[in-house]
Structures are given as C-alpha cells and as structure tokens.
Length: 180
Image (cartoon, rainbow, N blue to C red):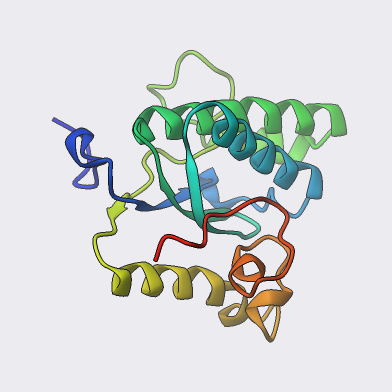
C-alpha cells in the first residue's frame, strides 16, 4: 500500500501524468540557472535512454510541474529525483551555499538515514491525464503559473516553461506537442 492516495498505476502507463516536484521547505533553489540545467540534463537523459516523453513543464524557484509519459514512469521519476538531488547538492556545496545546505539538512525527514540532506519533498502527486480537455487544463495551469505569480505578463516569456514549445517558438528542451 502506498503512503499517499496519489499513484502511478503500472498497468495504465499508456496515459500521461501531471506531476509536481517540490523542494523541501519550498527553498528557492531554481533561481540558479545551473540548478535548472541539471533538471534539463536529467530529462534529456531520460528522453534519450528511457522512452520518457516530456509533454509539458514549468520550473519555478522552488518547485516544478511536468506532464510526462513513459513505460516506466515511476522508475524514471525516482531516477530523476535521485540524480537531480545529488547533482544540485554537489552544486550547492561547490558554490559554498551554506545557508541552503543547512536548511536542506535541518528539513531532512528522520527516516532518511542514508543521507545528510533531503532535497525533494516525498511524493509527486501524480494525476493521470485521460482526456484532451484535462491535458489542456494542466498545460494552461503550468504555463500560467509564472503569470499568476507576477513574474511575467505572457507565459512564453518564462524561460523555464514549455509555453514557448506550444507557441511554436524554440524552447530550452524538446517537448512532445503533437499528442493531440
């Protein structure tokens, strides 16, 4: 039995899922372009090696949303979170970001005994997408997130979003937009 009501169903992985990954304590780590690049590098690796399809995303300062599909989405998400956590913690150590590292250490859950830090909150609240209407709703929600926060006036102006891909403009990573 899973600890959460949100699950990726192994027998229903032909559907994409809307997922959320949040930094513990909502710490603003993705204000560093090098941290965002680690996320992109991980997604690119999964696209090239794991039949992982990225259908949409937005990365904000302390969390990200994505719509993805894969024959092994649970495993791919676990690999993504493990890799990015390890690489971003290395990045913070190299940068001497002691305040952030101290917070990542203090916010670590007690049962996480195999590491000094915890980067991601547990879970990803996966929501299966079964209809075009639901897909468009999730994409719109993601793409409008930076607008709602007052960061930009138009979703295509947010660098770390697939809104540009859907507007047929160059994006920072390949996104499957022809799912319709």
